[in-house]
Image 1 (cartoon, rainbow, N blue to C red):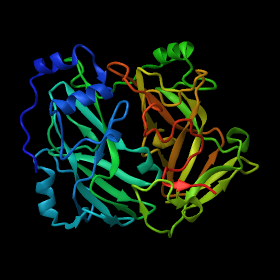
Image 2 (cartoon, one colour):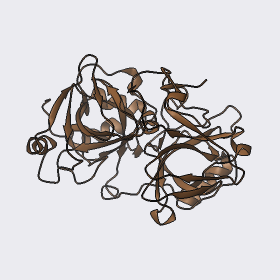
Image 3 (cartoon, rainbow, N blue to C red):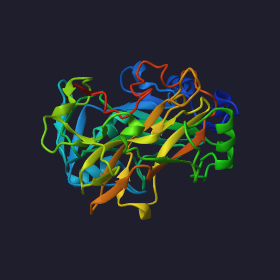
Image 4 (cartoon, rainbow, N blue to C red):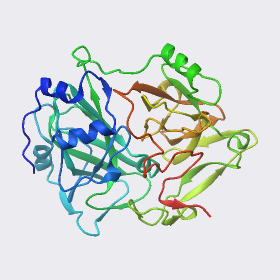
Amino acid sequence: MQSISLPLEDENASRLFGNAFGLLGRDKIELMLRRNLIRVLGDVEPSQLQPASLDLRLGPRAYRVRASFLPGKSRSVEEQLKVLRPDEISLKGRGAVLERGCVYVIPLLETLALPISISATANPKSSSGRLDIFTRLITDRSEIFDVTEPGYCGQLYAEISPRSFSVRVREGSKLNQIRFRRLNSQQLQRTDFAVDDRDLRKRHQQMPLVDGELNLRGGLVLRVALSDATLESRIVGYRAQKHTDIIDVDAVAAYDAADFWEPVYARSDRRLILDPDEFYILASQEKLHIPPDLAAEMVPIDPAMGEFRVHYAGFFDPGFGFTESGLPGSRAVLEVRSHEVPFILEDGQVIGRLVFEKMAEAPDVLYGAAGTSNYQGQGLKLSKHFRMR
C-alpha cells in the first residue's frame, strides 16, 4: 500500500490551477499526475487520459465479498474487508474470471492526495456499462459511492458486480473513470453543479446541442427510439442472452455479437415490453453534441415515471457528437434494466435527462480526437468487444 501525504495547501493549488473553476480537462489532470495529486503504481498509460476524465486501473488482487458495502465515516475499506474475511483472488498475469452475480472489491492502481478545493466523481466506462458490469468507486471513511470528498487522501477501490456476463479481468484492466472538479470557497458544500435550462437554451441557439427540438426539464430530456424510421434499421435494440461464454474486458472486436445478444426488432405498434431483470441496449431518438467547454452526465428519470433503471455509464466528454457540419452526430446509448414487473416502453417515451456542467476551461483534446474514442458518431451500438455479422 502506498503512503499518502497530506493534501496540497490550497494556496499552492491556486498557483497550479489559477482562477478557473469547474471540471478539469486532460491537461490539468496531467498536471495533477506530475504533482502527485494523483499517484499511480507503475507508469501512466496514455490511453487512460480522456478529455475530462482519467481511466482507473484494477490492481493485482481482488476480494470476493458476500455483499456490497460502504465503510462509513469511522472505517477504512481495508478495515471493513478484514471483518468480512473475503476470498482473495490474484489478477496478475492472465487475470481471473469475475462470476456473474458475485460482488468483488478491488484496490486500484491509482490513489489520491487532493487539495481541499478539488473533489472527484467516478462512473463506469461506457464499455463497462454496455457489458452490464455494475461498477462503483469506494473510498475510505465514506458513506456514498462514486464521490470523493474535497481534500481526500487515500486509496481508491472499485466495487464490481457483473450482472449479465461473467468477465475476465487482470491487473491494469480499466472499468471505471474519475473526473475532478475545482471548487471555489462558496462551492465547497454544493452538490449540484448543473448548467440551468435558460443557459442551455442560449447555448443551443449558438450551436445545436441536439438535432431536433430542444426539450429541457432540469437538463436535456432524452427519449427512447423504438421505430425503424428513426434508427433506419429494423433492429432497435439488443437483449443480453442468459448463458454465454466469458468475455475478456480487454479484448476488442473479439466476439460475435450473435453469441451474446438477441436483436430486438421494431414492432408496428412501436413498443417494447421490458421483461423483469433482463438487460437491454437501446438508443435515444436524439443525436447529441457536447460543446468543448461543457461535459454532461446522464441521470435517470424520476422513479415515479417507470420501474426501470437506465444508463449505468452516463458521462459524456466535451466534443462527444461533434461533426464537421456542426450538426449533432451521436445518439446516447441507453443501458436499460427493468425492475420487479414487466414495463411497456413506447417510441418517444422520456427515458432520461442529460445534465450539463461547465469545464474549468476547454480541454486540449476533445472526444473523437483522442485515439480511444470508441463511440464517436455512434447510433445503436454494442460495446467495443463485439463484432457484427
